[in-house]
Image 1 (cartoon, one colour):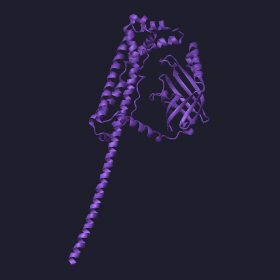
Image 2 (tube, helix red, strand yellow; image 1 turned 30 degrees about the horizontal axis):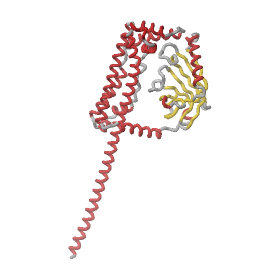
Image 3 (cartoon, helix red, strand yellow; image 1 turned 180 degrees about the horizontal axis):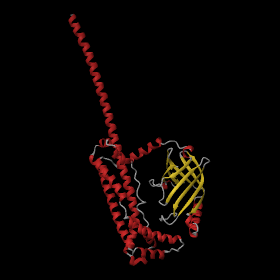
Length: 401
């Protein structure tokens, strides 16, 4: 009887030990399984976000490239038409002749695109991301797209040919600044004269080759990135949701915009993507603690495509205030001065006086809104636009002087 009781106790103890052991093993297995599931889910999310980031970046690049080529073609088509109908020059419309003349001033070197580099750098600089993406075809396509994006910027009109025709346009523009009356007959005669030269013929031929090459690169990028979307099952809706999610996260990461953070002297980054008109050479924004500001800009001929005609300096004065995270600049006055070597050239002085009068009339009591400000000790990026002109907002980037 005692032996049986001992045996039952022994079995009961071992049963408890085994149940405890099994529970422990099961708990560990469940924990490992859950951790593995969470790790796999995070890896899948990382892969998805990285994939959409790259695809969206290439979509934006394609759009930039297409917009630039369309801009070029707008002038090239008219120039090519004029070159093929010189025997009918008297019948060609004035706006077509003007576009053909302006075509000679295009400088592809200055028009090179500035692409965002973050997605490309993430793909190429960290080999662990290759493991995350885990799709050789997708990565190969993306690398080829980025290589072609770089090549797009490197394809230019032959520099010697381009400079010679830009010199023709510059000479014509100098005559305008010297006070020469310019009507459609003068433009027609000038275009006819220029378009008969070998330099312009070579320029048109070379320009066409560049456009064909750039269009081919865009078509290749479009095809490969379309394949990327299919390979990784990324839809337009996925990209839209990614963009919305990114924009919602951005404000939380931005430092507070305060009076102390904006006061100081800032230099406009001329090379920053889409930040400034092509003819601006330099621009300094000084924001004073007494809520006044001053903008000093050195620019080429105002709203013309000539970079060599003359330069002038305009200084804008006004007051500013903060409204939440928006910086409001109130325009008050402007002073415009031509370059010293042209100081005695009356037509230029008269021209600047007319511009100054127009600016002061059109912008009296106007304000510029600097919104979506992302600021640090050394840099400030903003979207700038006039009141009621949000659709005309432009990205600008400053560096503290």
